[in-house]
Image 1 (spheres, rainbow, N blue to C red):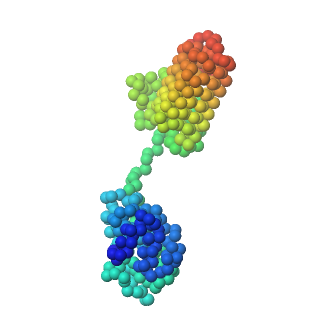
Image 2: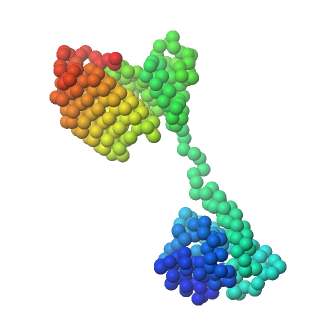
Image 3: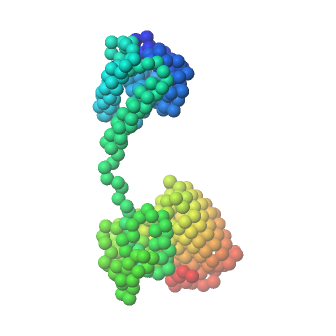
Length: 368
């Protein structure tokens, strides 16, 4: 199906200047209908948004003109030939039906590109509506071809521990609805078989399935380290993906989050931030650019870390704490709630206040 040569030339000439006017003019020439009638009929078409500037694009466009602007750019190169052939066949059938109808006129060319009917906007609209249905059928076929046959698997998580933090994590996971909770696992036999947040405690931690992600939902940092050392003694990252609600955490693309880490709602993680494994970051924390959070850290709600600030492995930072830019808090330390840390804190120290002052060694971390 081709246009008369002068019409094809017109498309090639005008397409670079004014695609819409050139196409409407050529269509008016072929159909004999007024330009305004054609413009009103196809004004909702997407035809003019996908026009190329080369001759081949023009030919394809005209071959598919009756499809009301089928987007050839969305068709893979391997299937363009099949789709064009099916479109040609569909249009040929419609043309044969239309030319047999009473009142039809003779073709402008020996191989008609369009069924010529009585020159009225209503006839053209009916014709285009019919062809639009043909186009939708072909679109469905292409979508089925190019869409992955199997949906992405839903991430599965096991919850280790059945205390307060576990209940918070389960509640958030259920509200987001993005992951599947395969069960709770705790070494406290008295809890086995109980229900927490509509999730059953399946058994001890050793009974956890092998093919799932897992979060150690226990507030004490040293306990999370002991459990991870037991489950992943070689440090292979067996815990799998961290968990955070995708739409409620602002995470820069250049930031890194370790395995088994939990990040609560409303947290901001800036560019080039590094967060270690099996951390707990409570809702509303603010981690500015280039901040570093070590493994097994607990950051309370609304903690603020300035740029390049660092928190060492196993440290507890209480709710509302502010750590000034470039300040370092040593490993396994304890910072009391609402403190302002403006100088470096050595490892294994208790500190607090505004500004934060040291007040003795801490043997282990604690939350609360």
